[in-house]
Length: 581
Image (cartoon, rainbow, N blue to C red; front, top):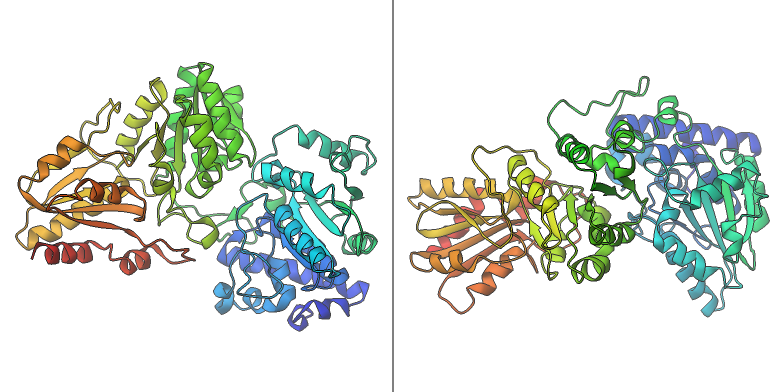
């Protein structure tokens, strides 16, 4: 087996044309084997096999530096840079991450997981090289979907004026996660249709030389192209036309479903997502009802519409009332503000890890203007995505401290719907709702008015008050049950708002409580609990702020995170008892 003999890019360079093509087949076969058993990014990696081999055949990594955008297409790169065992030996599948990681290899230059960043990062490397008087190639690899991100344009625009070696490989597979959206893609299609000869050339307009490769999955054609641009003294774009999911028929045909996948049947493509209720299904049904009942409702998403259950049928049915802005979170928030100002009812949703990309638009374009858009923050909390590049634990600290923004945290589906009903139809201020991961239901009536910060005391006790925010409310109930075993009947409070304090309720607790404990599914520093601690700062009330330590966790399971941060009900009850002494 050729792949077993590849320990570094130097081994790739020794292969003849026939062996290079065989290597591509072996890499693709190993990818399909691992992905079907382990899950991961399917389509992007299968489509980049030949390009990765060609890059390492022509260029001299790590002296020549290759930076992969998102880096979710770097699996073949890892195989060719000494990490093939993590793709060939099932017992070693978890020895490498799903993204580039400098701790793993000198061939990985950045930890990258968010999109549209590679051009700026690589341009920094190229500029540093020039300042030091060194000679080497710097290559940024970016997909056509990632070009929709504003940072990609900013990097291209800046790089185009440099008279230096800087190579951008545009992997054009005619897809983002779902279909591409934006005027740029008409230009890319025209370039493909004219084999790169169209005068309507986005890249040339920014100052780049340009080379088109129609056979983007032909390793020999790619080698020829990369040899032409190696050691270039000007910025150049190599535009390669590839097939997303190549080699796996169902991934080629259903590109959206196999952008990323859980383990699947390698023969049929069957993905067992289970039959349980999901927030995607809940939100899809709810939002489609809103769209149908009110022509002013507009749902906005940033390239991952499956997060709210908007698959192709829902997108088609919603028509103009659904907008996929591509990978452009900043634009999405400003667009929502403009829609709200114009009298529409915008609802923008993205994952917690991606809302970080648009802080300035949240603060300036939306909240400083106090326009009543609704934001739905999905995949929130430590039980969301759990690798360093996709942590979902910072949104409370980020969003709850922006003036004019009410950040609501429902405990269950029923409460979330009540909050969304109010947020979408009110005209007072922007509102964000933190959608948890687990789907929970609770009986009872839920308030219909969220015009002011108001906590809800669900159980009256004494000595100890437990304030459990959002999906950690049920954890608070479990803590109360633990304390009850020890003779302490605790008060249980659903605060609902992460963005403010209920002065009247908190003041009332001083009469017969000694300890207040706050629980939140996010970093404690700068979060909800610290607002409560600040309120009680000059009093005798003890406040235990329970959340996660501020840290870049990497693939730490939720149960382990809770144990490590003393967030299990038993640990919390133990700490409360100690505080009562």
